[in-house]
Every structure is written in C-alpha cells, then in structure tokens.
Length: 340
Image (cartoon, rainbow, N blue to C red; front, top):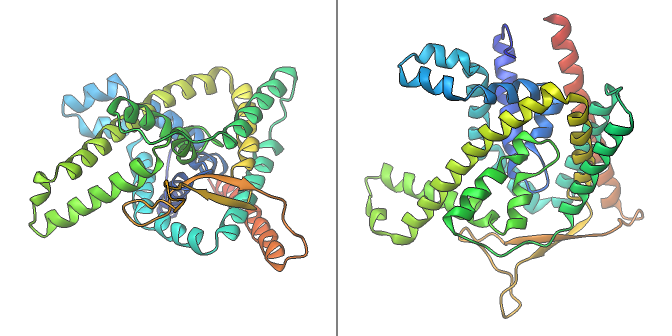
C-alpha cells in the first residue's frame, strides 16, 4: 500500500509526523501508534514494515538496493524513521523539560489528543455489532488494567532485555498501548531508555574527541551491550508485529479497529492529567535518581481535580487544545485527499 506520489510538502509533513510519533513513543502512557492512526498513515506504516521479509533480504544481499528500497516503500519509512530519530534527541528532550516544569498541562494536552483520537476513529466506524462491541470492551479492559499494574524491579538479563525490546515497539504498532509505560511496568524504563542511551551518547561524544578509553570501561561496555540487544529486540518486534497486524487488518479489519479503539479508550487512565507521581525510594526513604540525575518514576496516584482551582481550568484549556490538534490533523488529511 504505497502512496503513488508525494509532493515536497507531503514529505515534510511525513517527517513532522515522524517527529510527533517519536516524541509520543518516549512519553510513558502515550502511544506513537495513535499519531499514525489519526494522521492517516497507520495502514501504510504497517504494510511497509510487513515488506521487511525474506524477499527484501534477498534483494539486499544480491546488491539490488534500488529494488529493495522500492519494495519496502523506503522513501516513506526513511522519512518517518528519520523524524523519529531526530525527535529522540530533540523534540522528546523538549517534551521532557515541559513535563518536568508543567507536568499537568502536558498530560492535559495529551489527554485531549486521546479524546480527539477516540472521536476521530469512531466517527467513521459504522460496523458496530455484537462481535466488535466485545472486542472493543476487551481492548478497554486491557488498557485500564495495564494503567493500574505495579511495576517490577529492574532486570538486566539479556534475554529479558530482548523481550523488552519486542514489547517496547508496541506503542508504534498498537495504538493506545504505550511501549514506554510497559517498560516502566517491566522495571526497565530507566535502564533501556535513559541509562543505556546516555551511555551511547557519551561514547559517541568521546569517540569524536579521539578518546577511546571507554573500551576499558566494563560498565560502559555492558550498557552498550544491553542497548544493542534491546535494539535487536525492538527491530524483531517491529517486523514480527507488523506481519501479524498486516494479516489481521486484511482479514479482520473491523474487529481490529474495534479493539484498537478499546485500547485507546483504556489508555485514558494512564494519561489522566490529575495524578501524583510516585518515585522510587531507597532504604532511607529518599528519592532514587538515575545516572542523569532524573528521578525514577514507578507509577502514578490519580485524583479528582478541584474545580475551584485556576490551574484546573487552565488544564481544561489544554485538553481542548489537544482535541483541536487532532481535529486539525483530520482537516489536513481530508484536504490532502481532495487535492490528490
């Protein structure tokens, strides 16, 4: 399902969507897959990933790079993945800052975007019956259950890290299921998305300065090994899940859409703006920080907002902004289709 022609503006917006998807994947509770679904490229994304198969591998090994690039819808994937990569070191960092400074308003905006996404998906879904209602309820139940689970302890076993890699891409391929939040529940969010990434960044910085002393740093090498295994697991998960989703989208599209809608609805519990962050504590009752000095989050305690508080009304305003962002994406998508 490749897009026949892409203008320069389309390519730019695809890169921007990659930025948005990458930023969403980084935030616990938010799914990059929702961005793909609402922005109208979810199916193309899944079908393009599904093309990463044995045939693609043969084309690559035979040196037929142009055929390989066309077969996997390379222009689409490369622009999207480039946006995600740039986002990881830029937009997501800015997002981290705003979460630290104005956490309530950031969560409120995301909550609004999730509400807008539910409206966006459901307004064009006219296949409600006993089967799709059951699938939607299952999705809601799973989404709500996940938001109230208690996290496990950190585990750096390489087999478990590989499994975490497979699970972490769920946010990209399954709208409503946050890969980052799943990593928090598995206990490895800090290890895999903070400490190991910082180790890679420090290694690149030192190598560019001609300093290769890290090869004698056993802790650094261990972190890089963990990141490598996590990356392999993520790629494995991305390819295998895309094949599975490609199959169910072709054969059970209505049921799949219903359960995705349920997932997204259930995820509202995770992104509920009014919550108190619970941090990891040591034996002395002090907040534990990671190698970058950031407080380690273990879960959230939700509460009902005080409507007499001005901050609450500002948060409501950000919820409306979040909804409007999704509606604007919907408007842009319809306009693009009209001009195609």
